[in-house]
Structures are given as structure tokens and as C-alpha cells.
Length: 374
Image (cartoon, rainbow, N blue to C red):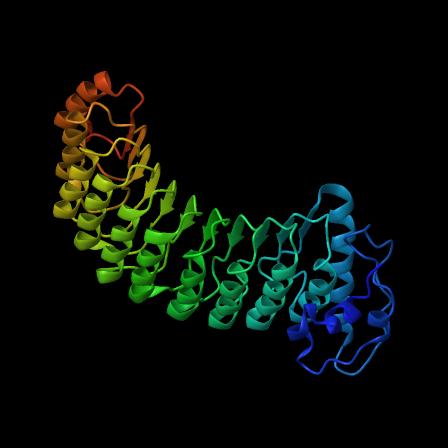
């Protein structure tokens, strides 16, 4: 059995006690080591200064969640307000020595930066947790800095969800520095974080050196201009990433041109989502030229970009010139095509039989229906 506060005072998690928290009676009791067996009951909570009834109730709820999840399936879910900052601190101490919980879901709990620090300090010591979701917690730059430091030391975490945390440019830079050396993390979700153009540059440098990531989510981050170009160049140099989500970023013409060049060099990427990126016809043509050379990409989502039928046709022409293409899914959501596109698609299917193209319908069909009206 492990006393959480004693363990923390033993320097494993010194930062968790920096707020001048008094040691409550239930913290002085043996806390039921999660690593050895689940606690049989929630710890007794006495009313003390600085811990009101609402916070106390949330800490009890957190402990009950631990007991249930450890017993049932070695995962802990504390989503949607189940555990705020005080509860996060209370949980972090026993989780240091946990050997049962492998998946930790603490999304949407309002833990903010200090809560992120508590979780990061715990993950520096824990060597059993492999998946963590901290999405929608307003961790901001402070949390990003702590998690970046953690990733430089942690050797077991393979999946990390950080969507919707207002990390911004600086939070992203802390994570990027860690990802240049971390080789274990395989799945990272950084969507909805307002990273911006400069973060795109940092991520480009990071991708060119990272050897661990297999899936990276960067949707809704305003990565555009030079940031989009540098990110694409980093992708071209990467030889490990399998899937990249860049949807809703405004890459525009320059970003699409750079991605086209990246697809000529990259021979490992299998899934690329660049839907809703304001890619015009000229950018689409350059991107299509990358497909004329690439042999590994299996799925490309170009949906809701203003490339028109001409852009869609350009992609099909490139695939016609690359019979060794591995493409299986090409998504042109909400874009209408004409009969010339359909005819070329039929021809391409003869050499690439696995190819499935999604689009918003055929222009000639709409005209026929309109002409047939009385």
C-alpha cells in the first residue's frame, strides 16, 4: 500500500504540492495502492480549509471511477467534468505507481495548465500507461510545456490526445522539441489548437526528424502561408508517418504546390486529408503531379476545395499516367464532375481496379433532369 502524499513528498511529484496544500486526514491514510489492487472504497474526506464540499465530491467521484475501471478493463475514464484541477492532483499521486491502468481518458475536465502539469509529472514516472486523452482541458502553453518535458523522458506512451487545448504557437514549439527525440509516441492529435503559421514551420522541422509518429492530427489550426509550405517539406523528408489530417487549415495554392512536391519524395504516407483548405485549380494541378509519381498513398481527401471539374480531371489524368499508384480512395466531396471525367475514371479503373472516387454528382445528369421538366 502506498501513501500518496508520502510518495509525493519523497520527490517523485514535488510540483503537485507547490500550491501550499495542507495534508488532509484522508491523504495521511493509506490510499489503497492502485498498482497493487483497486481500493475497496473511496477515501474518507474531511472538511478542511481550501477543500469545499464540491471539490471533495469530485475527488470521491474520481476515486470511484478508478475502482470501477481498474476492476473491469484496465482503463480509466474521467470525461466531461468528472475531475477538475484538485481531483487531477489527487489522482496523479497514486497513478505514479499504478501497474493496472493502461488507458487514461481525462478529456473535458477543465483541469487547465496546472492540471496538465500534474498529469505530465505522473507520466514521467509511470511506465504502464500507454494511451492518454487530455482533449478540451484548456491546457494552454503551460500545459504544453509540461507535456513536452514529459515526452522527452517517457518511454511507454504511444497515443496522446490534445485536441482543443488552446496550445497556440508556443505550446506547439515545446511539443515539437520533444518529438525530435521521442521515438515511442505513434498517435498524436493536436487539432483545434490555434497553432498558426509559425507553428507550421516548427512542425515541419519536427516531421523531418521524427521517427516515431504514425498518425498526426492537425485539423483546424490555421496552418497556412509559409507554415503550410514548411510543414509539407517536412512531410517530404519523413519516412515513418502513415496518416496526416490537415483539414480546415487554409493551405491555399502555395501549400498545395508544396504538398505535391512532398508526394514525389515521400514513400510511406498512406492517408492524407486536405479537405476544406481553399486549394484553387492551380494548386490542385501541382498536387496532382505528385500523384503521378507517388506509389504508396492509399487515401486522399480533397473535399470542399474550389478546384472545379478541371481539377478533378487533372487528378484522374495523373493517375492514368501512374499505373503503379496505390490509391484506393479519392474524395471530391461536394464537387460536381462531367461526363469526360466519368469516361476517364472508367479507363483508369482498368489499371487501378481498387480505386473508388467519391464526388458530388455529374453535371450532365443535372442538366438532363432540368431539360426533361415539362
